[in-house]
Image (tube, rainbow, N blue to C red; front, side):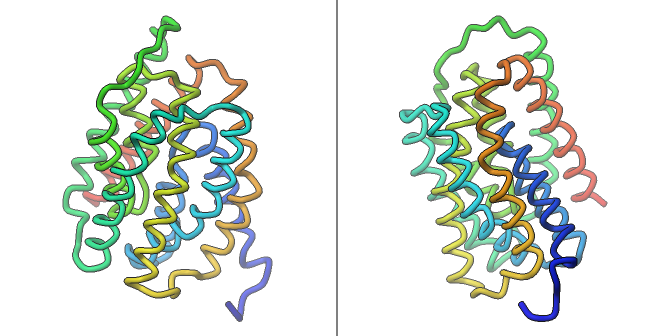
Length: 251
């Protein structure tokens, strides 16, 4: 990592900080924001996804621990998400390292945009009643696969769909964030086995610094924010990022 200074890192530190604040508070977007930045700078998709997941191994560890301290984690839901999520992540990382797995991306992004619009509507009609999510394991498998293959998406896919099923926003965001640590560690190990350590560049170092600094703050926001506001913000973020993903995929 010779040849760059702290000044070179500052833009990436700022992006990592902002992306992790959003991710910790709303349960999504670190991978989407960070991957988009790296791809726009010309980083190959597999290397971008590997770099982002390397960073997320650290940021999700700090964020997950903070959510545990603030009692934002539903441990039964955590257990149901982790195993299928890891399996999907390994498959997605392997495919992205060997073939082009981005063909379905615009369709997935369009689906998530629709979910986002529904969450906004539901946020304005939230009654305060919550129910346990029924479809969890298939969601974890799909979320893990798409997260690895697309450079991000665990939070968008899993958080968005759990909220649609009526799960409590605070517990959903905290649990998805905590389980993401196990997922990203597995995906990173798979990428390192396939690609080596070449993905750890100045960009990933900057994202790491900014993300780790911001990670404890998101859990505090989730604990204090009302469920209605969280649901609306998640819906808005999911809609905007997904529509942008469709635009990128088709552009």
